[in-house]
Length: 258
Image (cartoon, rainbow, N blue to C red; front, side, top):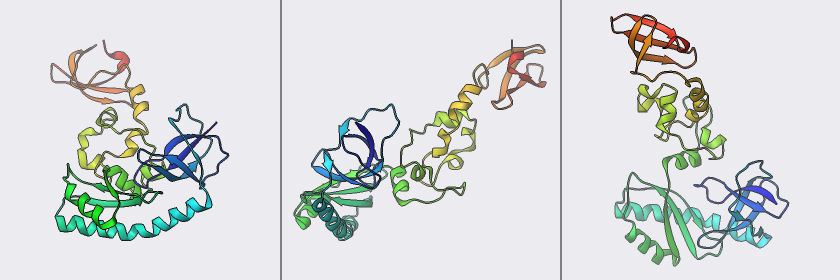
C-alpha cells in the first residue's frame, strides 16, 4: 500500500489517501466524496508519515474522465461569473472564491468566504434554476483563500501555506506567547490573510523547551538579594530580569532562583 497526497478542490488542503496503484506526481485519480466520485490530482507519493489514510483511491482516471474534467473546468469560469452576479444582485455579504462542477455533471460547488453566517438560501434556489443542477455552497477560511490566491509575506518569501501545500498545523496565540511576541499586537504577528502568521509554528517547540524551569512573568521569586517580581524572561539567553521589593532591578540566571 502506498500513501498518496491528493488535491481535490483548489480551496482545500491536499488529503492523504491509500493506493494500490503505482502513481506519480500529477497523475489524475478517482476518489469518493460525500456526494459523488470526483477526480483529484496527485501532489506527492509514498509519503513517510505515521498518519494513516482514512480513505482509499478508487482507481486511476481514464482518458474519458480527463476529457470530462477538462470540459467542466472550461465551463467553470462562466458558472462562477453567474454566481458572482447573483450574489451582487442579492446583496449578500460574501466573497466568491472558486467553483467546481462534479464529475457526474449533476452538482456545482461554490466556495466563498464571509465574516459570519450568510443566509444563501435564495442564492442556491436561483442558481439551481439557472444551472439545472444541485448547488452547494461551502464556506472556507481566510487562510485557505490566501493559499489559493498566493503571494508573498513581509519576509519577502512565498506564503508558508503555499510552500507547504496547506499542510500546516493550527496556529495558536500560545505560540506567539511562548515566543514572547504576543505583546507586539495582532497586526504585527498577523499574515496577509489577517490570521496569525504560519511561521509562528516553526520555533514554538524550541521556545517551550528553553523555557522549562524558567519562572512565569509577573510571578514572585526569591533571589540571593531578596524577594522580587519577574518582569522579563529571555528564553534564548536564559536571563531573568527581576524587580526586587526594594525597587532595585537585577538580572539573574534561572539557576540562581531560589
